[in-house]
Length: 335
Image (cartoon, rainbow, N blue to C red; front, side, top):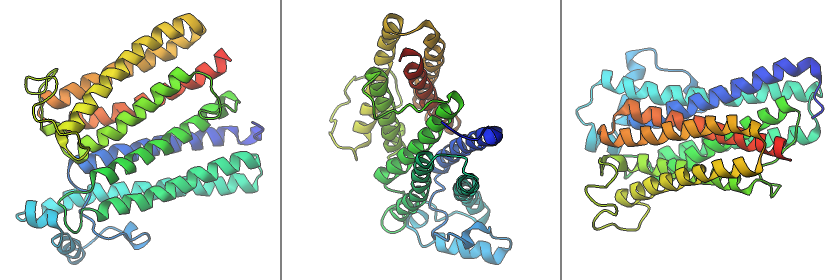
C-alpha cells in the first residue's frame, strides 16, 4: 500500500472505529430480535426518522402505527405505551447506529479521496464496501416489511440475509484493516493458498446464516436439551425444510460439530505445514470457538436466556475476526 504516512494514525483510528461500530450494530440488532422489537417502527424515514418522539402526541402516533401490525393484534394487544417505548428504543437505536456507520464511513472516505491518501484501487474497494452498507439499509427495511402485513415476525430468510451482509461488511473492513497495518495486499478470494482456512471461514459464515434462521424461527425454544434432541440424535418426525424449526436447529447443531472437528484438524495442519508463530493466532481462534460452542449449549439448556443468547452472538463476532486474523497471518507468514 502507498498511503501517506501523515494520515497513518487517522486511518487506523477510522478503521478501528468502523469495526467497533459495525460490531455494535450487530450486537444491538441481535438484541432487537431477541426482544421482538424489530417491528416497533413501521415506517422507513431515512431523514425524519433520526429524530425520536419527544412528546406524548408523537409517542402515540408511533404506537398507533404499531397497533395496525399483526404482531400487536395477535401477540401484544395488551401492551401499554410504556412497554411499547422499550421495544421502540431498541429498534430506534439500531437504526441510528446504522445511519451513523454510513456517515462514519463516507465522510472520512471523501476526505481521504481529495487528499489523495489512497490509490484508485483502494478507493474503488472502499466504495464497494460503502455500497454494501447502503444496500444493508435497504435489506433491513425489506426485512421489516415482511412482518408488517401477514406475519407476527419478520421473514427468517430475510433476517438471515440481513445478518449475513452485516458480517460481510464487518469482514471486509477488518480485512482491509489487517492489510493496512501489515502493509500488505492479500486477498481472500483471488488465491488458492490456504484452502483449508478458507473452507473453515466459509463454514463459520454458513453457521452464522443458519444461526439467524434459528433466531428468526425461535428454533432454540423447541429442543432445549443437549447433546440429544429430546432423547434422540435425530428428532422424531424431522421434516427437511429450512422453514421447519426442528430441522434448522438440527443443522445448526451438526454444523457446529463439523466446525469443531475441522478446527482440531487445523491444529495438525498448522503444526505440519506452517510456521510456529501462527500458533498464537490459532490458540486465540480455538479459544473463541470453545466459548462459542459452550454458549450455544447454554442457550439451549438455560431455556433460551436472552443474556446468554446475546453473548452467543457477540462471540460469533469474535469468532469471525479471529479466523480472519488467522487466515491473514497464514497468508503473510506462510507465503
